[in-house]
Length: 487
Image (cartoon, rainbow, N blue to C red; front, side, top):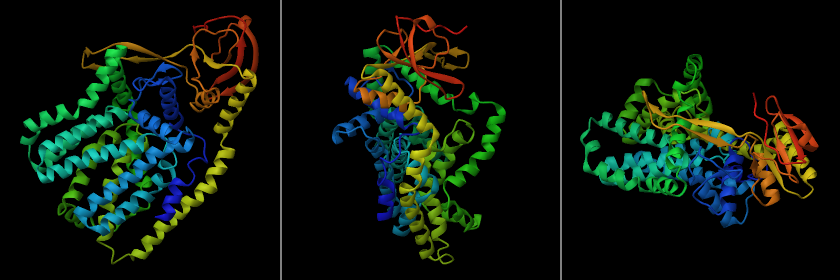
């Protein structure tokens, strides 16, 4: 446990942000600067791709610590990861005993993907979201076992609301699929159509309705926000991808899932299938764990847009099954061997913190590019204001049910820049890095627009080929101009 504590929390500031981390940090930082907890923004423009709960938590941590450093951004999800393990231990101990609870908890902390990737890039929101979904599922399991149906529906729908306010549509799918799976497994349908379900849903969904209702009243775009979340979710589904991509993903998905949870997925080879089946059948938590996986994982299995981070809520359910399989063949494998493996993995994470991470920080090409752009922009501005400039990107929101189109609208967003750049420059300036569609004199601009009015350019300070086939320029204009539309 000491090694794991040092491994998980000992190097939160070593590495620059990667993946989705800078976007999460930037949105929360802008909400804090604007003192607006309702409307997420990026470069001052409304941001509709994620709800605000994770941003609220980051803002609270910013305020509590008085810092916006990398370690502060990474801390909430890492604490949620540890919290999920503790919650799992308490539940598994009650239903399976202390030994299986302990094995499965250590398995959760030391599977290769979670130890060397998920907990390293913990500035993303997915570990926190996994905790919420796991608690949502446990609320259903525990209350159903005790036949406390009103409590089941109130708690699970409340957690659905919190999950939706974190990541959107997937929380609805987890709720519906899990409730349906429980009804099928127990051949018990009546409770789904009870007054407790209706009342529980009405009470539990109050936070969700309150937020989007308030957003609609204040900005008139609550429905647009909701439907863009729906569009965002469906873009990753099988229906939005080519058939070949879908087929390849269906083949690759179980192999990747197996690899991500090594070395503990090797426990699948410890017991014959018949003994696994009997073991699962005799314990309520193991049955529910298998049910949750089967009822929910198929959505990700058929969706080529799936990323490993979308699957973190399955971790405790997978590991409790594997720990139970391992425990029932413990006479074949000495516990000291597995303890040694856990110690080795924990020690490897500590070594990773102080060898691989610093090396990546020094040598990773993308991070070097971002730092070069950051320094060039500051040198060009000489203490003046820096902004970005160009034609905004568009998101077409067009959700439909069969032939019925619910809403048609267009969202305009700033041109894409890796979020490390606007975050670093905004924090350097102490103000939001604004995005302009009309250039102004006396401001240093970053732009990737290829079509610019050359006579309006006062000076180009820096240029570099970046992300794909674009060229980034740092420049000033001698008069106010709009970007030139592409033909």
